[in-house]
Length: 86
Image (cartoon, rainbow, N blue to C red):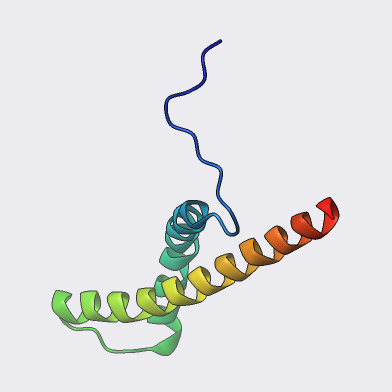
């Protein structure tokens, strides 16, 4: 069988995996977090613009936290796999 045209063998952390995982986890975790924050905080959001601004602010915080956690996880797994090879 022929080798695929596009191959990927990263040295260190696979940033493509980090970005894809961050995207998926932010959507999966971010939507419920934004909804719960809107309900629990009790913020008055009278207009659609206010609702969108609130969702963007909370969603940005969720994205940042998820991105840092995913990167740290990937770095730890890379260090463990390189230690196991030694």
